Image (cartoon, rainbow, N blue to C red; front, side, top):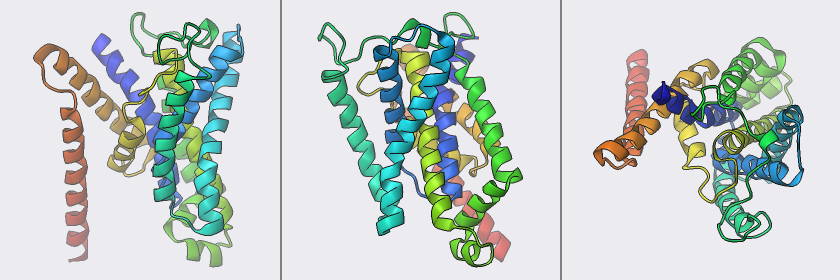
Length: 294
């Protein structure tokens, strides 16, 4: 049971960030900045949890996700506006912002948010009211995982059953046709999708701080935002399949940590396996396309 709980806990940030990536990619936005947006959400959660003196879990549950989502949207607003106003490629700006976010976390845990004793590069522990209670005692599995599954279902409904979701998919599939034939305001749709993607990714950071680490650290994320791209691509950007894909990658990463402890196999081996899976998927997809056109 503890191994399953560890896999589900590991899959939680991958699932949420994977949904963020899928939303952006469906809108034709190459958002490679989920890592930075996740860190922005983690900073916001740590700030609220250590500075706002929250004593009610209900207040924390309402406030922290909202503040984190706003932080992620604000972080995504920079590349979104640069793309919309000046045509700057979001691949470049989002990658650059990932490094800025990483160094911002380092600055904060050595400066304004460093713990009171000024001994370790981390923040003070967040308030008890801001911590998510484990669903299984002694594990890190919290309500964040079922909430993430609910987000996947809501995103699927949004994309497939709403007018706004259709406009987003149309803008991503063919912006010119969407603008001319569908009379869709493509620029507005893509900016809003970019902001929503950033907000979603930030929720993954908030879930990590409130459910796993209970403080802000350097290297808080082992690359969840980057792995989320693989999660979304393996699921072919389908929100419900992202749940399965995140579970697969979460199990791989949780198993890698266990193998390193028990058998001495380096945990980084899992990243090579993940890369091989993605390469295999690309080869299979290309072969299927060629077979279909033959």
